[in-house]
Image 1 (cartoon, rainbow, N blue to C red):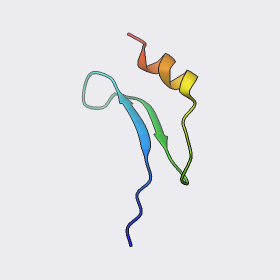
Image 2: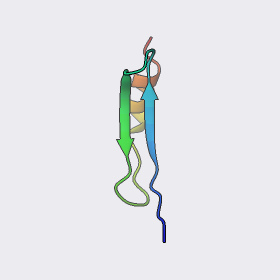
Image 3: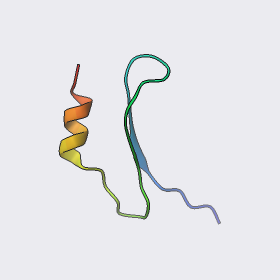
Image 4: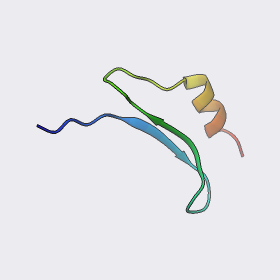
Length: 43
């Protein structure tokens, strides 16, 4: 049986520029949305 957990990845320009990474540990985990929006909206 395969199980898949979610996550969030925000990448900037370039090949090695990961700005934000969140990996679910268990079902129902959620990233801090205020932090995620702030990071994603940076220029």
